Image 1 (spheres, rainbow, N blue to C red):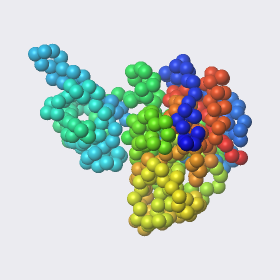
Image 2 (image 1 turned 45 degrees about the horizontal axis):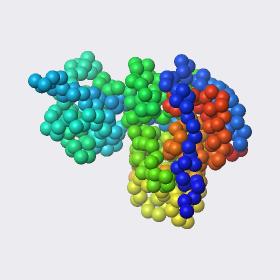
Image 3 (image 1 turned 60 degrees about the vertical axis):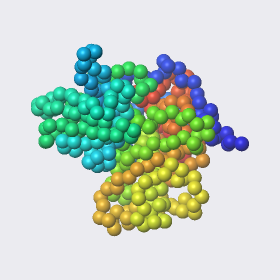
Image 4 (image 1 turned 180 degrees about the horizontal axis):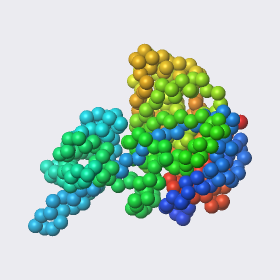
Length: 410
């Protein structure tokens, strides 16, 4: 018989359509902030966040930058009429590098794994073309189906000094979440992006960070709150609904992470609580711990964190945070590395014990989603009380919605 906590229905709640925030607030830091602290719930405003954090807190932000990942092409016209519109949604790079930061700097050509809209109308031998103006130069961008089954699309362009990131910025549209049910506007280019974003490669925003402003960041510094910026390039899999009734059967998407040596050192020498800004930062930090566990077993382990690593019965699971970070630091020093690039499929659901994070800043998420499972893991059954309070007190939900600060421990 399935454990009740493993059953998908345990993570459902009623979310009326009108509670989904379709557009952002005019002022980022004027969103509501639900404070959950040791079981108590209160209503605050986001710009008061610096005053609410425990002393010596260390916030970890995700500095990934959303790329305008939706590219539209039109097939050549025929005697039968205008050609069909084809949408190419960039997912992750295939060549010349699978490392997103490097792939975005590709010149003249590159290949990406994509979702293709209206794919039936795009036969394998048809080359799609689009004329663009990039940095004042006119160029021809071509797209061909390199591997129809894998949905690998090959792009090439005729201006050798132009990078792929420049092409995407010129041609692409902001990939708003499907549940917003509207087209992206010019405002979304800036608003569906954190003010501290810098590493291009995400196709969805780390939305917990959308509320931060330069003023709030400055106040955090004045309060002595430490800030670190890691990177997890959020993939489209973050919107993938759970269909399996047994949550453990849900296939997790792999996402690319970038961690710097200074961040490993700060975790090794931590003074106060580690608070993740968003579920993506939380997944990155917890994945980093498990990499230390893998290195403890194999000093040359690959930085790739499998879905259920935390639920396997290993004595090494009791490795302290300090011991884990020492393993990682040792690996980086042996290989003279300043940063690590890895992949994670980590799945955090009730039964998981957090190894790094002691608090979370996050928005309000879809019912029966992997993100709700993560919240339920952090605060236990109180997640239902938190969401009921938010619904009763007019909080706005999902990507452009309001925020919460979850501090389950003192």
